[in-house]
Amino acid sequence: MTIRVLLADDQALVRASFRMIIESESEPELEVVGEAATGDEAVRLARSTVADVVLMDIRMPDMDGLAATGAITADDDLAGVRVLILTTFEADEYVFQALRAGASGFLGKGVEPADLLDAIRLVARGEALLSPRATKALIARYLALPDHKGSPVPELTSLTERERQVLVLVAAGLSNDAIAERLHVSPWTAKTHVNRIMAKLGARDRAQLVVIAYQTGFARG
Image 1 (cartoon, rainbow, N blue to C red):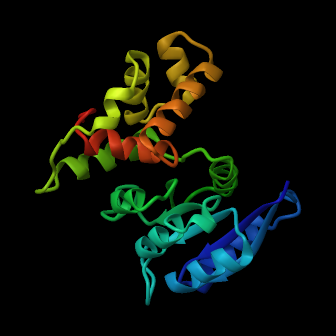
Image 2: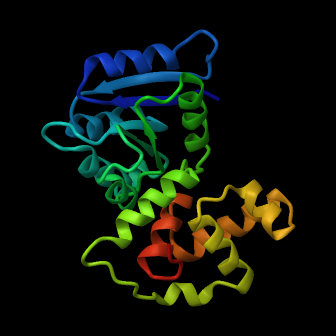
């Protein structure tokens, strides 16, 4: 199955570099279906090209990547579109806002070509790209916000004890395999728990679970 990728970055050279990597002959299942230089253009092309994954820069003219991400993830007609944020630093001050807007994860612009391709495939499968290092940076920034408040929400009461354990591990940035090893269960069982938690809490993916866990005060850094 072909994975359709939309490139959104205001720098033509960056877009050209990513296109060259994605459309290499060794990656026939990946296809660049469009390029956007502004956030507004990214939203329009996400609709018209039926993209699977949008590589979204944060700082763009007209509509920035944060607003564009929110517009895409809030559109029911684009429910299958995943947004992968491109940032200069893992601890970019806007990363938390991007995840709250519905992004499925983020990458540094200096990412290795193989890692970029793996990330696109991962996000296209509906998973989230959120490394432990990036998670810790995200949490630290969120907890440092002046208006940070841990307010429990009713949905958390629907979680079983095991699901609560899994949510804490997800919030720590652990992968399904790492969670399985920690809890002495199979990776399939760990993934099932994560999927059930997402369904109960109304989260798009595991990146959103991290946000919910810290936003509600259920998990703490």
